[in-house]
Amino acid sequence: MNKPGTQTIETKRLTLRQFRVEDAQEMFDNWASDPEVTKFLTWPPHTSAELTKMLLTDWVSRYEDGGYFNWAMELKESGQVIGNISVVRLREEIEEAEMGYCMGKAFWGQGLMPEALKAVLDYLFDAAGLNRVAACHDANNPKSGRVMEKAGMKLEGTWRAGGKNNQGVCDAVYHSMIRSDRREQ
Image 1 (cartoon, rainbow, N blue to C red):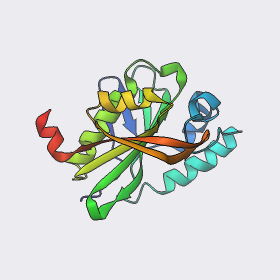
Image 2 (image 1 turned 90 degrees about the vertical axis):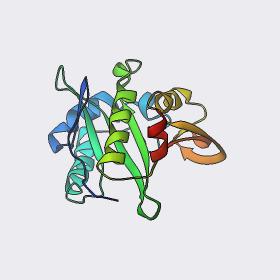
Image 3 (image 1 turned 90 degrees about the horizontal axis):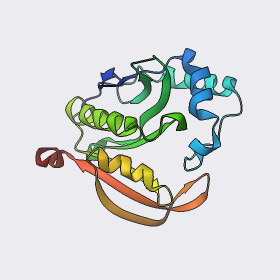
Image 4 (image 1 turned 45 degrees about the vertical axis):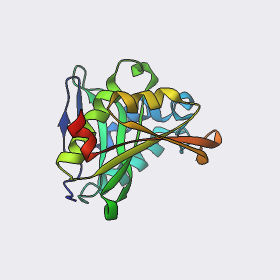
């Protein structure tokens, strides 16, 4: 496994880049404060932009670690920061990353998250040299699973009562992609 860290990735409509502390207000306004966005996540909605700024200060300090992967999703058209995609768990011993993502609801349904996820999958396999990338979603949030499928991930199964989020204990539905899956696509 290599540790290239969070490098800028360009897609057709997005620039995936490192967060900046100055992104705090847009992050707060576009998704971090929205209970609908955070409904199936593991962290509660932010109550102030100052809280978001404190979080971003921590995230920015981690970028020197080549094993830290956390991208701001910026719309090329407007330069607006609309979401976040990151490695939430890295298991170097098996060359695996587990992904997490969220985006402002004003941008849902436009294919932006699958576009971002596909680009990050390519980066993690090609630049970081990973063998497996996984993600899971609450069974009550099938649209998140659809994102994974559109990005080329395969359904693995459901871990009954195996997750916990803002809704409580939930069934966690897992998807993954391994290096050999990419050759099949």
